[in-house]
Image 1 (spheres, rainbow, N blue to C red):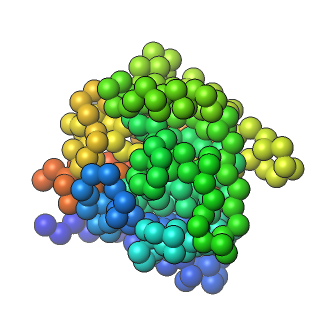
Image 2 (cartoon, helix red, strand yellow):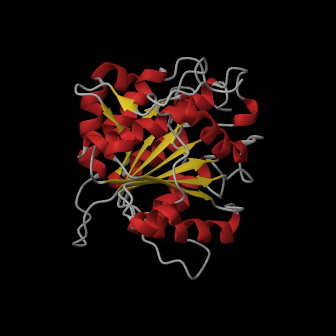
Length: 314
């Protein structure tokens, strides 16, 4: 069913191409599709998700109620850089790192649309992140290369492509929010503790509240890297941190996860920090979503919450 048209009610999405936008003005935020899926530990159609998120965005407006109310399109210059072709594998990761590096140099915030969680590795490296915040039910500290390994790889690995020059992330500048009972192993919990990763469990989020959790995460991930460069935080939004009732399109979501409003509030609060230079939205399988597309629509709202956080910096 086509959407109604109202000239007084602008819709989200349909932002100009990055190259077109960059030709005449600077860019505040840029979207980039990174449709990773080939190394997923469970069958997934996550490569279909960037297009699905773009299709869902026009279902929403661009106005924040404030007060005072503002239109994101009036206060932000937003562009879309299209998709990385075949982002999986060594060559795909190298292309992703190079493209994100280019976009990060030309904007304040790169928003990567996944794809499974393996995209976090090249996107964070491309943005030269010195700190990492994850919203995730899982540690993603497995060995090997898959959607269950990006956090470990950011600490331990270097890209296989020799042409890519990157720096690992100090694990003491990593904060994992929403880690859930019965969704991880003792071995990976011990690995996180041994490395000094700050783990804030799902129960901790609800006990402490969003503001308190976000303040701690920003302080840890935004710590000075000790290299004379400014801190740069990457935010990984793994939507399977949410309750399965609101995220049925996430293969690993379970009953009892975050509510949709909690994920949205966390996303906007973290993105309001000017040290956040990149973010990814991961683990949504658009081909496995409910008939009402609730998971993809939540992912699209996360895009808008990231933009709202960016607008709050102004």
